[in-house]
Image (cartoon, rainbow, N blue to C red):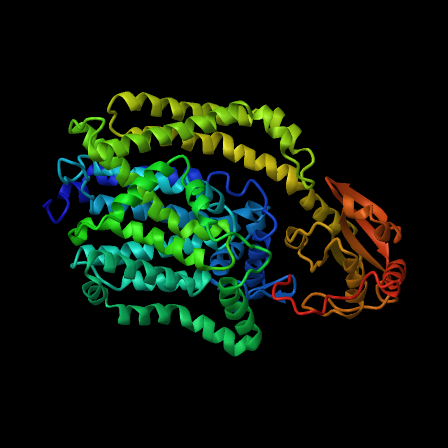
Length: 622
């Protein structure tokens, strides 16, 4: 049996400090570099950003509000963290696009997970599994950094770790909570309560789902280890849940007192119970949806993940301090099982599993390296499975590199009506070729390591992918922002120049919440259907929300309308003869005479072609 505690040199030596420093620097580069240089990404992040900025401006830190309406979708932690940055003096000067403040909580959460994974494997190195028996790794610092990068380089984490939504914050709080709980199990000298406290923050990040995922993980792990009662007793689960409740419940209670039934129906009824029990927002997916998500979310390291999962689920009793592999496997399974059971399925729901995937990938690579150093033959037990996983990882990396080199065959297939110039700009930018270069370098590192044992081969493969993110993916992100989001910001600037006192603002067709954020005004959003025109006419006369009062034609004879090109060509919109004030990308800024608007809307209603449907119950409005 390996020693119960790692060597002191691992805990306190230069290697320990260097590994954490390297992990922090890589995390800052991946998630914080150029964070505020692209604008908010429609459609959801501007709603978070708008609600957070409203908190900072109004001083109401209890109820999130956006576009003049309460926003009950998510708990307040993400809004509070964003709002603290928005409340800084001269915030608009150093963050003119608002995306630095909006994305910072997600970025810091992702870096926090990287450091937590690294520190856990440094303090509790896991023995390598092989035919020669179990032994502690010779270089635990390398496995620790590899785990952090395996998490950070997940395609899902690279995306959600930089945008202003609550998914990365939930993933970060849940990961730190679970790691602290496992540490309390692994080392009886550590306190049991910090994990439960952080779990309360996870509940404030996205709701009760955090407790469910943590509970499933602990129950599955405890059952698998044959020590569920001992685990429950060591972690003091009853008292722990009280701590979680003391952190999270006060906000929910205050919201029920202040907002009452609408908050209960929206947050608990729609955004939690109904999302689990029925499909919302047309997010209908087959039951096996998260199996391909599992594969894609860890590319190109998925074969190592599957090998690590297989070994983590092996029914082999282990000492608590060496059970992290099993704990990570049940953590990942908890996310897979719970969200597979849910009726509404989204790729972002997989994010809480990505830290566990990082651990399993790193430990699978560590096992293989240890076995090959010990002289395993290519056909021997664990060595054979590792060689297959390693070869498949290299093959996937090579496949991506080849696909990028032949991008001229698939880039023309990209057809997005919101980004009509994207194909030409991608081809001319040279960024895709740059991406191909870094993936090719990673593939070459992997190929070289197939024939000879190279300690740290996976880290060698990961570093070119870090460079790919910094020097190819981030420039591509900014290119996409210029094509898709800059026209909306230009429209917002035009609105601020052209709008008259008491004149309302509307957006029809393609709906972008960032227009509300960048204008700082209430925007009446209506879709492309005939009902959209009828609703707009009726809402101008009757709808009241914070920042928007109903008005007659005499009080406000015109309305500013931001409309996309395709919608503007529809017969019923051409009939209103809007005066074009400006255009940017696919958008047009019209000043519309309300008399013509009401006449066209009335004609549609009289023909039975449309009706005012905006008063119909809608669980999600902005």
